[in-house]
Length: 289
Image 1: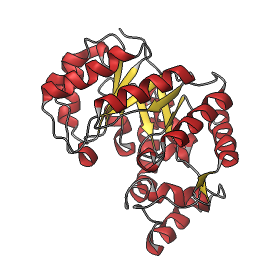
Image 2 (image 1 turned 90 degrees about the horizontal axis):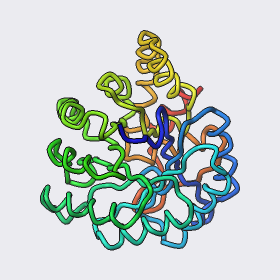
Image 3 (image 1 turned 30 degrees about the horizontal axis):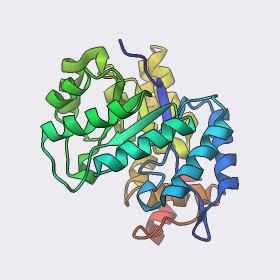
Image 4 (image 1 turned 60 degrees about the horizontal axis):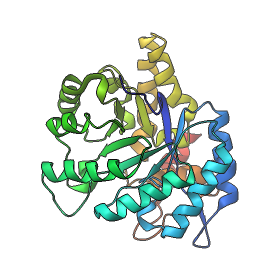
């Protein structure tokens, strides 16, 4: 069995902005809160972190900050994916040099490569670094799905140690588990499917929900791994209303508003994303209360 980067909950950290710049003070305080809550790992420069609208120097500064504040207390996983393989390689090397514990690499988007192209893409990235890589499959955003058969081929690469599965396709996830077994640990990429994926030998979740309620998210995973499946189900069902609200508009629009409502001052998303609608804000306010 491959060594896992983490088991349990990794928070896909939102990025706080103020006057179009990263609010590092808030970011540092938020990391401390996450670690003190018992979270198992942290992801920076991911979808929720708005990496797609950040400049290279901003990403580097954010990674440095997260690694410094965390100080090896939990793993730091950095999103380094791109639809340009050479850019993904460059960013992956940079993250490794800065001290990242692992990488989260989304499928190349827009280009519409083949499954064999996906294999070559990931092989090229994995050959460029020595730290662990988690694949990220989110077809609704990228227009590209990693097939179970492709997962099997990629699972043979030593430093590919997991997949974040956000396809929403439980049948596909079941087949990945069947084909790959312990060679490709599966992490839920959807907060409403944490328990179903855990039941398929999943190892945890890379979560949006845990930004605003780490204890509830950890309740799902901790209860499951303790063998208390009834409590795990209770927490999963309890979380559904807020999970649904967090994805009613494009992530991370709702979670940033929820964090603002909780008093963290995360600012607004960068264009082309905009702040959430008044109706959703009122719904989030009621759910948080």
